[in-house]
Structures are given as structure tokens and as C-alpha cells.
View 1 (cartoon, rainbow, N blue to C red):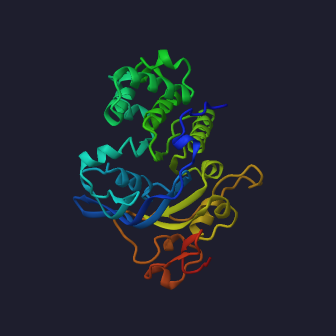
View 2: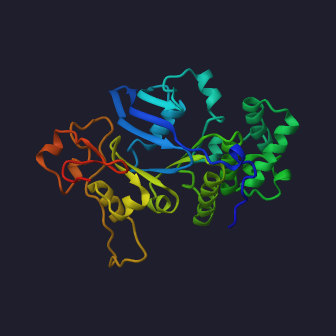
View 3: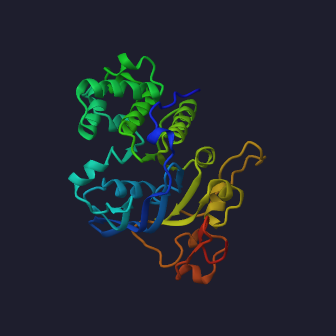
Length: 336
């Protein structure tokens, strides 16, 4: 499917560059009746303008909580510590009224289920235009015109008429397109996408992913895609961050990481992904054991209980993160 390109480009077509977001030693905890539960344990990374970054890992690895913390959308019993800087400005712990000025304008988020993100009682037109009225100070007529243009840009057929419909009158794929258009109305620098194609069929998934890739290329928008689908990452992302037990196991350019995975967990994930060009004789590789309970923070490597290459020190000594400038890996038994 050919997607419609966005007409407006930043700075007359000049693609932005440089580091836009820096996350340093990010930790996320939740207060529960049983005590504090650690969901993210000392995660650090940086995002560059215009790149598409994939964050992968099993359920419970902390992927979504990283995004929610950056956006200031943690549950009331959650708290984050460390540092998150947007263009050099510390935003972790920023008050809600200050964060509201950044949400939508500088960074936006697309959630898994658009039906729970869109207000079922309001027409799509109302939900789209209020973003522009609030963040850009547009009048209602100008905001409506811009909203229709954005719906057209994300390939909503007959956008001028359909903008007046309610969310339930759209299909799942079309609702997700509405969410993407809403997230991009103010042309934010960063778009966070949390499993944006989970509930969609394969054809619609491909269309949504192609659309996001085009938007990054056209607008210079940095896209951060949280997913468990390595096929999606391989086709869309420039760089990959592999999470396990709330920590980064490995990161690097997608092409390099897929061609030469270093960490045993990364190798296990790739080996567990079915491939059409290989015969498995009916058997699929699996990683033995279960992901760690979030309530128990490992002293050493969180993957140690499931790792076939583990050594005694892996259980009690946290691996030092090796960094060669493009790849990182946190492992005692492999090196860059």
C-alpha cells in the first residue's frame, strides 16, 4: 500500500539531527501490599533525531514502563528515579502541568488498544481539534482543516466526512490510524509506540508499520517502538535495545545485532523466531525456564537461571556493560 506523504516538513525539508533524549540510570518501582517491586533497574540509552528504535523483550521485561515513566504516565503507586533529559531539560519528576506542555507537542504516545485511548462519547473531530487548540492555539476552523489533512495523510478514506464519526464507527486498523494522526498533529520530536499493531491483522499491521516508517523519513520524527515481534524490528528499526528483567542485555544497530547477536538472551530470542528459509522439522527452539519475578531483583545477571553459558559469578556479580561505541552488551562470558 502506498502511504500519503506528509506535506509539511520541518525547516523546509531539513532533517533534524543530534541527540534528542537521554535516559540515564532509570529505575522504576511500584509500591504494593508486599513491598516495593522493581520493574526497571538502571536503564540508560539515548535517542537521536529521526531514528527508529525498537525495544524488545518478553512480557514483564519493563518495556512499557520505560515509556510510561518518560511520558509521566506511571500508575499512582509507581515512581521513577534517575534522569530523563529532553533536549537537555530534565523531565523526570516534572509537574503534570509542565509535562502537559510537552505531551503532544514534543513527545506523543500510541497505545496498544486505540479503543481504550479514544473517548467513545466524542466524535473524532472533537478529539483531534482539541489537541491543536490546546497546544498550537489554533482557532476551531483552522484546527479542523489541519486535522482533516492529517487523517488524509494517514490514509483515512474520505477524511473530510469520516472525521465527524465516533470511534466505534471505525475498524480497528482505522482507529489506530486515527491515534497515529492525533499523536502527530503537533509534529512531536518523539513518537512512542507501545505494541501499536498487536490487535490488528497481518495486512493492516504492515500498513501501519509502513506508515510509521514514512512519517519518520518525512518529518524526521524519532520513533520508539516497543514490541515482542522481532520480524517487525528487523523490517522497521535502525537500532535495537534488548531488555530482560528490567535491564538492557544488549543494544546496537539492527542489522549488526541480527547478523551477530552477542548476548545469550538475544541469541535465544532470535533462535526462537520461526523462519521460512529454515527447516525445523516441526520443532521450534525455546528458551528454558521462566522470566524472573519482578519482585526479586537479581544480584548478578537476571538471565543467569536460564542461560546455558552461565558461570558461578553470573549469579552474584552484575555484568559490566561493554560499549564499543555502537554496540553494548552486559555479559560476563561474551565480549564485543
